[in-house]
Length: 217
Image 1 (cartoon, rainbow, N blue to C red):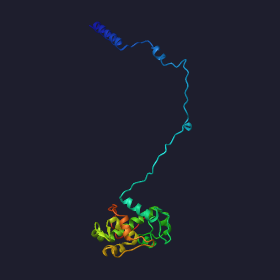
Image 2 (tube, helix red, strand yellow):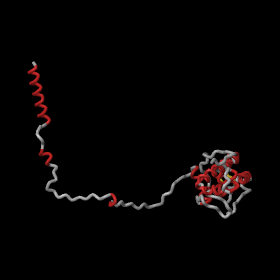
Image 3 (cartoon, rainbow, N blue to C red):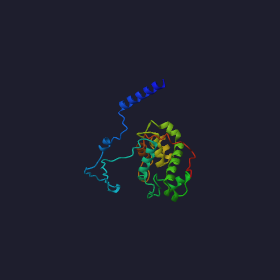
Image 4 (tube, helix red, strand yellow):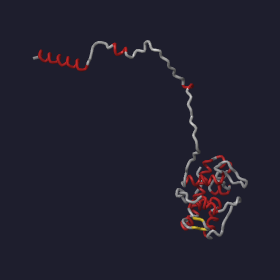
């Protein structure tokens, strides 16, 4: 019985070797097919410093589009005030990107003009605090007049807040409640009506109305 099983095993092994083409001999013919002996080889691989990278010319102008977002609102206002320059002091002594009066800065907790001019983050924080205060002061006027036309101007919340930055919340109240009869213009002739139009339609819902908003150091 064992002899019979051994014969069957040998037979199966023979069939397997034949089917797979396996050979115990070293196949030197296959290896020789990849030999480069007798060939003329010409190649050169450059070093990293020798590689020239051609940078294509890009045509056209590209700008960051902020749209009518809150960031778009404050950047548009900052550009109008000072062309976005944190280091600007105008001829009347107004400071920084948003052209603050020193007394306004004291109201939001900033007492050093020198520190204010050297710190862009502080300027941004002062703008945020002052705008929050104005939104609280004008909260009833925002509720009453947004969507209406006053003095030929369509009223929006962002327009009101921008006008308050220009003229102060009190003067904006007078303009709205007088139907546009009581106006205001700054030293350069810029009016409340102009700011109401120019900064109309931005999303200022991000700004929280806060009567006591101050800069946090």
